[in-house]
Amino acid sequence: MSFDRHLAEIAREYPQWTIWRSDAGRWWATRHHPLSAAQRDAGCAMTIDADDPDGLRDRLRDQERRAGERHTWRAGPAPP
Figure 1 (tube, one colour):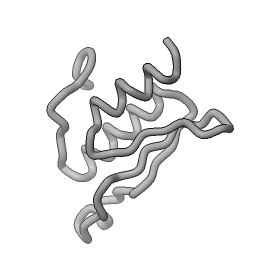
Figure 2 (tube, rainbow, N blue to C red; figure 1 turned 60 degrees about the horizontal axis):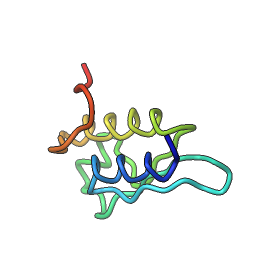
Figure 3 (spheres, rainbow, N blue to C red; figure 1 turned 180 degrees about the vertical axis):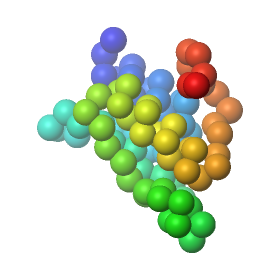
């Protein structure tokens, strides 16, 4: 699958984040809104990165868990 398609899918799955791939090939996501004090205390980050699309999805799921959030649309099976 092309990286453009991965970008589009992840952006659709996580609409509260801006998703991109750097010229160096790293995958990045930045939140659209500032973190609350509670989110910061829970270990949430404004920007995260990963080596590949699956790694970015893992990091995004971790951020949701830390923030107590769930997005409503998910491709494929839900994580355990």
